[in-house]
Image (cartoon, rainbow, N blue to C red; front, side, top):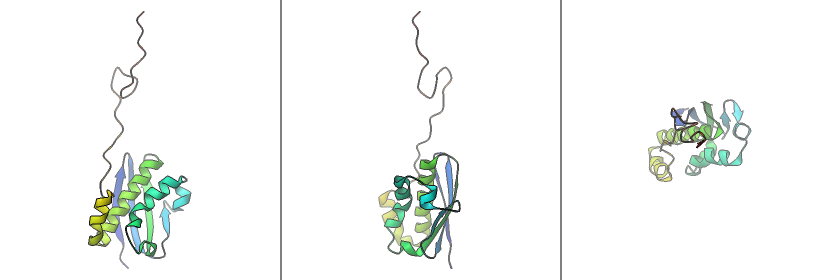
Length: 128
């Protein structure tokens, strides 16, 4: 039994993903995928890399994810799954790359600047 492990990151989230040959069970932090990610769009985001693989139902997903919010965590899990699938079968690398699943999303929160209310928002201007 071969286990494929990979790490995925997005925003402040980090996911450690394991793919194990099995019955198609999907666990995130010990909970079912649909239970952990309540929004359908997030479940679809996580499941997207499996759409490229023909025998995805034979792989169990076990992921530990932390940090950030749900959207960042879903993106981190998706990248981890794609990397683990690429490790499991080198021929999947090209279609995964073409679909954009092997690219880490570089967008991060912009830092707050001094003299401003936020990253870009200014305090209200008063002429008098």
